[in-house]
Length: 422
Image (cartoon, rainbow, N blue to C red):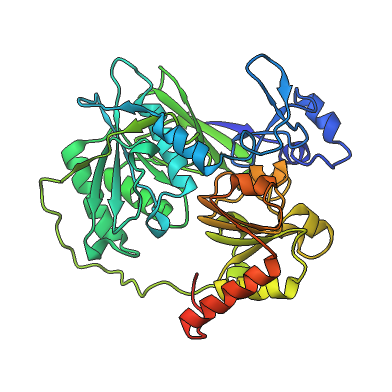
């Protein structure tokens, strides 16, 4: 039996906008104050951007200006954290949770890692009889941290027939996995990158009524499979609660990514051969899009400008040559150099780019919060001691105008004057 809970989008919107005149009143009504937390649009609890700092181990509020606790980790700290992870090996799992990540660009996206965190939560619910997470991957990939993402088993299909948009061929593989391994749950990302389509095809093949738009799960002993899920409905205006079915399509931020354990990521091979069916779909390749039209929260490569940018025409030219989506700090937006929808940060847009290039941005806490899920951060700045440099994976110290000009010249020379995706 499904239960529908009506939400108040306006009140939630006010609670996320600290400049609204009713912000304090609504926040207090929701049981919070200036340092409270609030629910983000995708169901994840966010900290109030005004509440700078964090609570130390002795209960004393500390102020973090480096952004290491609030906005992300330095590369050295992140590497040390990975090395200190507890190794987990599940030799005889009680059941399997199958995950089919999108693997955009051959790497696990932020959405994929959230989904794996959800799978890990289901698999680890019973410490005496733990389950294992098996990931089904298609095509070539560049990911070397599968175990760090919480994967115990890997079924990797590299054949050319699974590359691109090939839902029928991929569905044949998932059907073979179902026959051989009989996973208790199938989890796929509810995304337009392939997971949403493939998940619905799979649910139809298995005769299951899939749950879509899932953003939260809770243990429920009365449910047939022991879990209850909450999903978005009614164009985001309703929360629908129902028992978690075997097939679930989850939204981004459905769970926290795995960050404390390292798993085996043991490779498996399907014993039965996959039938080769004549596909009714022909993939004609990717269609080039203008990076300027890509939303910030969907962009994989972002060139972001701040107060240190003095030549904005050169900045726009660099973004065009590099094939990057443009972003900006709050200062640049407030000064009128960039539109409000280009603002990156906790008070703007949270981004999950594979590469984020910060040009002339010092690194306020709110900005560091907004880029903490980016894979690689490159900082160009005159100040070697600013906070964005501490967060960056690669830092270039110097005049941003000269550095961008040199980068553009180098790229144009290598491309022979032809524009291509960066």
